[in-house]
Image (cartoon, rainbow, N blue to C red; front, top):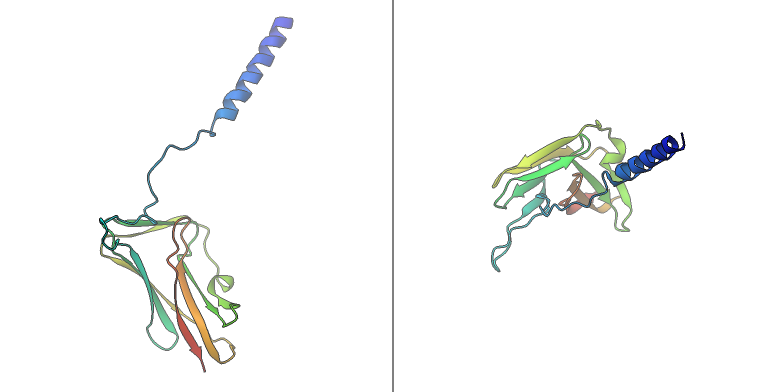
Length: 158
């Protein structure tokens, strides 16, 4: 009977050690995240993903990413949100943040930009009661990890 108790205790202890070891191995992956990888061109300007923002009409703007690398760029997302934008006053205070007034589906997703292609998102700045002045309009990508490719421009309220 004592041997059965010791055998049971040994098996439980052994199981605890095995289960503790599961999932604690450090990753040996040396692969870089393609969203942040830049190409080395032997001293020449490195090709990259280039963000831009432009005004399409009165309150509509376009946020664009152009893939100037030699590889397709994959961006993974944890929700249906792909980008965000904000308006910031001269004091650095956020006057408007799009994601604070938006709802997104909690669903995994991804976007791929092939070499030489672009990815664009049009957005409209809603009617806001802002003081007259110059604000910074910033737009950025919202991937799960990697570079966010933020770009800014002036937004004038008269």
